[in-house]
Image (cartoon, rainbow, N blue to C red; front, side, top):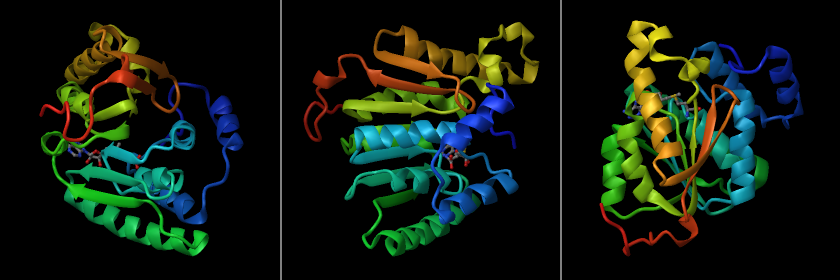
Length: 244
Ligand SMILES: C[S@@+](CC[C@H](N)C(=O)[O-])C[C@H]1O[C@@H](n2cnc3c(N)ncnc32)[C@H](O)[C@@H]1O
């Protein structure tokens, strides 16, 4: 699996070399995912997730797309004490492996640090069903990491919007699709046109609907950072102003 798709290998390697080393457990989990061709967050994209966690100190995080739990554990490593991360996956073998990896990570964290890692609640569900359930419970999150089946992103966004706490950040991975997002649909392979259309639709919602402020960065396969417009006054409080 390539580490970077949008910037040349030389620059990607240099950027990766600036990154602090991961704890052994996380490095091994990352290498294992790559060897088994499990699509996990790329090295340079990890730096952005790490930075956002350290800078914003989110108490409640939602991840959509667990795979084998690498990014859940990676994120937990940089969250403040007492925070909680929910993560959802719909492919059972990966969900099961993620549960094992998360349990092992939490033990490793405790041994290294002498206190418990942030809680990681791993959920087996279809993402949209789970988003609806969370909306129904008026849950809210400070950071949402969207990293699942891209064709479904437009359908998720209305739910995600309701789940964003005041000042929350939505981080979306793989949006540039190896750069093909910038291509006309006629130059995209016929079999990829639906996904191309859906991601374009999603990007339009993030950038042109007037509801969000977003910035797209060419890290990994394209990372997009989004906040709700005027989100500091956005009236979402658990149990108040919440409409599912
Ligand atoms: C790119 S991988 C996630 C990688 C993970 N975030 C990481 O960096 O370690 C996307 C995952 O989303 C899962 N997925 C796809 N569609 C889904 C859906 N509708 N509901 C829940 N999970 C889904 C896939 O099975 C896959 O494991």
